[in-house]
Every structure is written in structure tokens, then in C-alpha cells.
Amino acid sequence: MKVIIHGGFFSESANNENTKLAKQNALSAIVVQANTYLQTHTALETVVFAVSLLENNELFNAGFGSQIQSDGKVRLSAALMDGKTQRFSGVINIEEVKNPILVAEQLLAYDDRVLSGAGALNFARDNGFGYFNPFTQQRLIEYEAKLNQNNRKGTVGCVALDQDGNLASGTSTGGKGFEIPCRVSDSATTAGNFANHFAAISCTGVGEDIVSTGLATKIVTRVTDGWTLKKATEKSFAELKEIDGFAGIIGISASGEVYHFDSHPYMVWAAFDGSLQVFN
Image 1: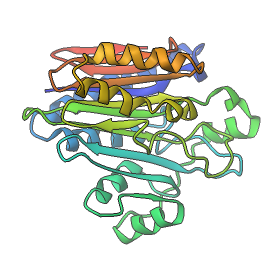
Image 2 (image 1 turned 30 degrees about the vertical axis):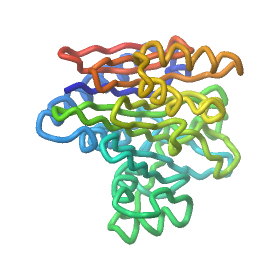
Image 3 (image 1 turned 180 degrees about the vertical axis):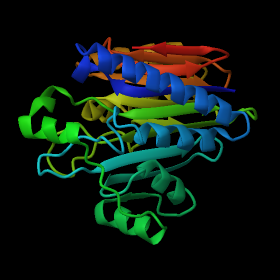
């Protein structure tokens, strides 16, 4: 049983030691909670649990504390994939909900499993998800001052391997900030979030770069074909470099290989692989 989470990239606060420490502490606490939860729950349930905790923490750009788009609205995207059933679900640009990952979880049971905009919101309301204002004072300050022009790489995610050998991945984002309204990134697609019986991956970084290379799917496919997670990731990032792409990933293989990789030195992550690990 293993679990790894990420909190996106740290570029927006690279010089703020207090924020850096706060993120490290938050990731440490959440991955410990997720590991405890994993002892009695499936990988899928654990991923939903961990991502929802990340969404609830305003330090991260997902759920509460998400970035504001150029028209002044917050729109959220999230995806979930169960490696056991290979079912993928997601919501894209959903507004006024607290935990988009929980809406994605509900969608797993439906034939139409990826919804966007008003359709995603209507589904959420029909399934008991009430109104929630995701704006925070800090994001409003950044928006008004346009300070987050350099803060465009925030996402959260979790990958877990349970006691039965099942894998799952979940990813959630509030976007890059000041984007064209309703822009779609990688987080609610299989390019940014993918799992099967062999491996599971959650991505962060520049969504367009991740989509252009099909990063999560590509890595998992290579592991499925017999590559180690490390080798599959390194090869895929070499291809990402060809387009000057920017990304980071966390992943676990069915053999228990836990791996992280990024093209920038400030991705923040935490893992519980027998012991607690935290890195940024």
C-alpha cells in the first residue's frame, strides 16, 4: 500500500519561505492522513479523500483558493480514474462547488462521465452538491494586481496503490489564472490523469504541453508494455523537452515503484512509501 500526492509547482511563492513551509507541512499532514485512510479503503476511495483535502486547503490552486480567470470567475476542473475498472470521469470548468473531485466521483457510475460548464453544475446540484464560493482574499488580491501572471502551474493530485494491488489517480485544478474563460487544460483529461492495472499518473504543469504530448497516458502505456515507471517517465519527458514543455508527474506502478519527476525544481509533493517523504 502506497500513496503519493502533489501540490503543483511552487513558482508563485519561491521566495516566500513561510508559504513554502506551510505547503510542506500541509502536504505532510495530508499524505499521512491519506496513508491511514488507505489501510481500510481502496485506492480509488483514498485518491478521492486525499484530493478533497487538497481542494479544501487554500494554499493550493484547486477547489477553495483556485485561480481567477480573465472574466473574474473561478472555474474548476477535476478528473478521477480507477485503474481496476479503467473508468475515467471528470468535470471541466464547473463553478460554485467546493470539491470538483467529489462530483467526478459521482460521475463514475454514469455512462456520460465527463461533463463541462453548466451541464456539470446541473449534475452537481441534482446530486446534492450545494453552492460554495471558492474565492479567497489572497486570490482576489492577486487577480486585482495581476500578480499571478507568473503563477500558472498549480494543480493538485493523488495516486494510490491499495492492499489488493489496485491503482487509482485523481487530479484537480483551478486553472492557470487570467486564462481565456472556459479554457480546458489537461487535468480533466487522460493526458493529465490516467490509471490502469499497471500504473497510475497525475500531472501538473502547463496543461497545453501535457495535452500535446499525452503525457500521463503515454507513461502508463509504456509501463503496460513492460517499461519501468522511471524509464517510461524519463523517455516521455525527453519527448516533452522536444516541444520545450513544462510538467511534473507523480506515479505508482503495480509493482510498487513510486516515482516523481519534473522539468522545474519547485514541484511540491509528499509520499508515504513505508515512511514519510516530502520534497519541493
